[in-house]
Amino acid sequence: MRFFNTLGRSLQEFQPIQPGIVQMYTCGPTVYNFAHIGNFRAYLFEDVLRRTLEYFGNKVVQVMNLTDVDDKTIRDSRAAGLRLPDFTRKYKDAFFEDLKTLRIEPAEYYPEATTHIPEMIALIQVLFDKGFAYQSEDGSVYFSISRSAGYGQLARIDREQQRAGVRINTDEYEKDAVADFALWKAWSPSDGDVKWDSPWGPGRPGWHLECSAMSMKYLGKTFDIHTGGVDNMFPHHEDEIAQSEAANSCKFVNYWLHCEHLTIDNKKMSKSLGNFYTLRDLIAKGYTGAEVRWALIGTHYRSKLNFSLDLCDQARGTLRKFAGFFQRLRTLKKGPLGKEKARELARGAEKSFADAMGDDLGIAEALAAVFTLERTVNAALAANEFESEAADVILEQFRRFDRILGALDVDAAPAGEIPEEILELARKRAEARKARDFRLADEIRDQLKAQGWLVEDTPGGIKVKKA
Image 1: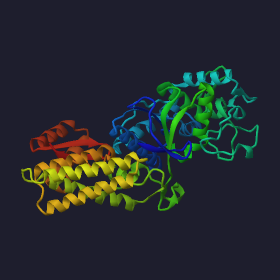
Image 2: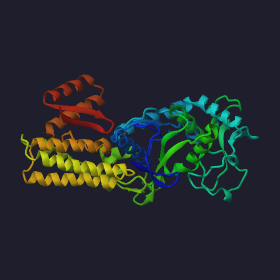
Image 3: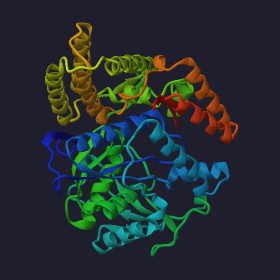
Image 4: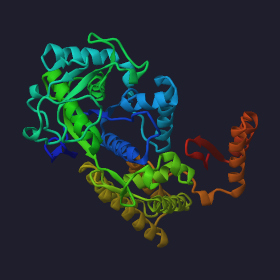
């Protein structure tokens, strides 16, 4: 495999520190609201990356942080009149529900910033001891950019053009504001009851510090991959590198991967423009998690993704076409006709797919291999060249594709193939569950099972498939 490493701006062969084990840190949500589809574009890129690493035989140890204390969570929790933990809990729960809806594989660790304050204080103390941190007259603790020789290497900042001696106390700032950044923010009345004791007085950690402390705890001082959106590159990732390498005197991360922005109908997503979508908005419009997933993963992660509802409609049509294709394969008569041809086709498609995904997650070329196999097999079906053993080979190949794509549902019956009376029973069961009549819901489930059907409750709605 090889990836485009933002640090160095070049395609590089991927070599994990430990052969067969990949340690990866992915920037997670700031839990002050429901995540929007721009966020999920990044999380799905990271999921495709994880699945690809596994596809090539690696074990992945992934950490995704939850930022539950920063300027925005404090501001909005106070506006809502809620304690910070009570306010953020709603959005943490919603985030995990959305991950399931989009079929994003769970990370091994989801550390919350508020439960890792001791690690953050310890990291600041190390920076103090090494002369990289200082306390200002306002009581906050800052990182001294002038002491960091390599600062700007990731985002390629021209430090000569920046003003010296400026401090930044906010969590996010623009690229022309290179300055000493806050490691520890002294408590102010605007923080309300959000504060922790520290050697420098009551306060809270800076946002950039959180990821360094948590990645070091779970992955060590140096690890393989760090990901995020391009908007995280500066200042967040740049500051992570500075403080981590200052504290540990070693390289922080070997490979940095960043995904591009998402636009809506070629415009920046904005509530004021009425083009702002959360995943829940799209589910409410009738789209499934699989359809949204397919729409969001089909563009290379380093290219801007122009999202539209038409893209979801196209995804729906594509997935339904595949569902019908799989159903035709499952219903072929018994016999070995075409088995060797099927194996040859599968091997060729597998190689093209793997070569593409291994080359910086080349999704367009990988999908081309998937569609080519589908068209070729459909032609063979039309010519009566395949029977059931050949079909089994092709179905297994599509299951392998779906280890990365995660949306094909090779073994699920397409909606058009499910008898209407079965769908009606599934709807009645859903209504019974909503009314908390679990006895009736269980009876209907057993009735469906007796007729050869299974019904599953998913965040995206009910799913019916053959038992």
